[in-house]
Image (cartoon, rainbow, N blue to C red):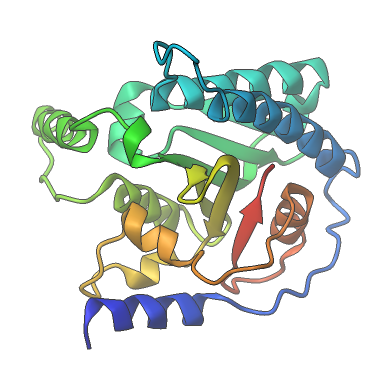
Length: 248
């Protein structure tokens, strides 16, 4: 079986029909407040995704776009006091390299404030927006961090490191890969959310941007951000959950 067959097998096995019930322990304000913050962050980021400098002097980098989204989201969530029930934690450079995530969203348990559901987020950009050799530099730093910690270096892509991090936490920790623009649709933001991608690890399939993008091929229906969060907080048991989301 070649890699294409493995990718197709992985894709078809991950998607399940979603049936969920509202979780009574979750604040009824969570989902609309979250969607308000996502709309603000996505709209601001989309302005820069679609911006075209007539003189071709200004080109927002991939890191700048990620920071615009995250900073806008954090500002709006603070204004709405969402942080009391839904936290957002930006990773340090070291955490980003080791865990693969840029930030982590968490549904907080009341009144302990401990995270009961987590969504680790990694952002993908169009190749022409991505700084050269970013992954290679990250791997070099990753090796150095592991050496200093006296731990074995296990080479993984950044996507694989995040998938393994989520799997180590459990089924209530989801990996969310966000695409800031896709081929033939550079102005919109999409995402793949899953708590089951670790099933592909060790099956001769490299989990990277190409692998994740394969899930979108032929897709015509996408969940909304509210549908994504409703599915996450309403899911019961340890069943796998994978879904495609459109944020703009």
